[in-house]
Image 1 (cartoon, helix red, strand yellow):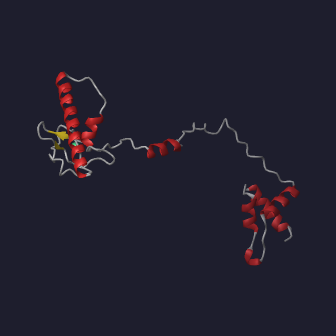
Image 2 (image 1 turned 180 degrees about the horizontal axis):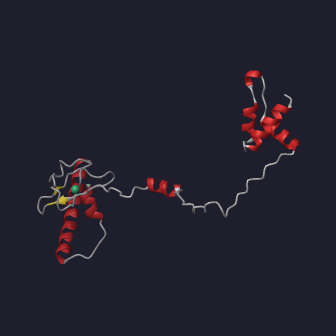
Image 3 (image 1 turned 45 degrees about the horizontal axis):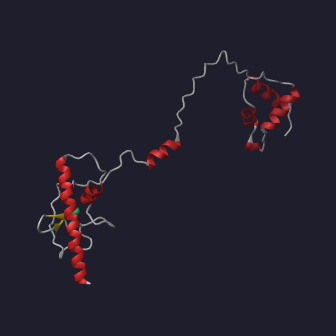
Length: 182
Ligand SMILES: [Zn+2]
């Protein structure tokens, strides 16, 4: 490709029109005629001709003031943490030991996985509801048996004393049955 006068004239027109080098190259190229002018060829020719463009000054005084950047990025770590830890941890509902209805199983009908919370005075019966794994009591009675000691009223104190005696007697009965079975 040679820069004949006609093409140089076209180049000058396009250059003065403010087209970019790649736009000029595309305009001057005529692929149908096998004429391909590269962007670099346009830049080279303009330089050789001594045509220069004023560098577009980025005058910050005239341009619109930049909007302060609003941080839209969020803390990914905090989101991940929030996902890992549900805000509401559902505790299984355990009915109070005082409200559950004991099955009143006697010692002979007590299964190994039955709650051994004793009831009764003369004849000891047991709660009999399924016990928690690795526990002698159902969830409700385990809660009652292992709850933190707190200030008790006199009535509650005596009730607990009675319960302790009951449990002691129940253990004695169970030991006796176990000895018989052995
Ligand atoms: Zn129980």
